[in-house]
Image 1: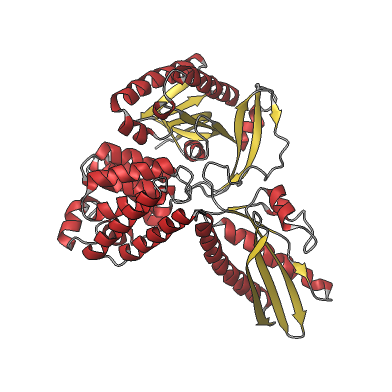
Image 2: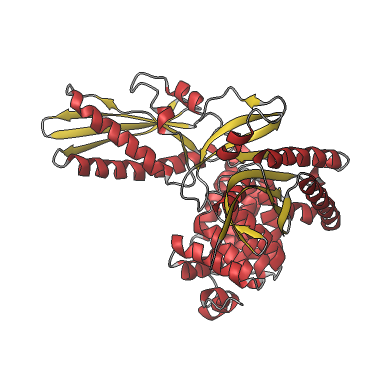
Length: 510
């Protein structure tokens, strides 16, 4: 088979919160969607672009140049803003748009490949009503269009091997934000609101200057290891290593790098032993939240370096996860009660019995009563409802959770469970739409692609389901049994496999 390739600018546009809007006003939202898609298609055609594919509320288009793609994105957002001005904010349909420049595979009037995938993944980083472009696009358009670009730093995009530097686009005078290369990518106001960290060069606390290489080696390995954690954003080494080891204010470092946490440490050799000390600092409160000391006999220096790095990484992941949970804890006494009830609810959920599930639902309901704006409590009750086939109630609770927690670090989980609930009530279109949204979240791991595979299979879209299934198996080879047991823990094996049998047996329709 001869594969045709070409260079193209890819535009990907998607509605923010489409399922919630449909739940509020199904007819009105569909009318808005139809009108907006006509508008988008017209703007694309006027710029010599081509709509390649519509997928529900999403649009994929290609352009002969990056300039025309970005100018079209700006024109679309301006036109949509004008169109939505007369519509109530809680019912207004808004898009997120991303543009990437890359080589694509052309087959039967469609385009495939990383050039397309990167555009779709970048879209998940975009704030509602905004635009984001890749570094390749930015390089082509800077100085050529009336817009400001703000560097969002290097991004870990799901199922994309290498990091991609992204830029947000704002209408106005051409040029750059004054912020440095790593400043905007991981601050609390970014769309995904992931935790972020900067690793400073480690101090050489020995009198032997030759130990400098070991100290720096540990820090470099930590940056590399932390970068593999999808739910964590890590400042680039060339930015964090501009600071002097042990001679900086962590708060200034965090401000300069745009990170939430700062890791610093030191290395000291004494005879045949080597000691590594590390401390993790929360920049917002300027407090040390974790510290540890690692002692080793100095034999194979590189093996020791690997062992210490792995030990630090394991401890760091646990500490940051705990710190992030504490960060979301409300501060008022009533909210603290709601928080406690919420966690008691999960303690019962994890026992996986019908009696504990009933108790969990009651605790989540009490948390909601105490704090009606506490989105995670709606998620907990929604999840509990899916376990007992109260799927209509589950969909309502999960829609509320998603609406109240658009920047929650585990938003993908809310969306996956919502897709399950819709699947179990046989609303396969809504399940698919929610699964697509979940799969685009950069930290959704195998759950997003697994959920997408289920929903595609239920829609009879065999080839796409197989592709999503294959992606899942790469990350989680034993996912089918795990997935079925976690989604339907109270059912017999026979009922479980009947409900998700096509996926388990790979009997996905042709």
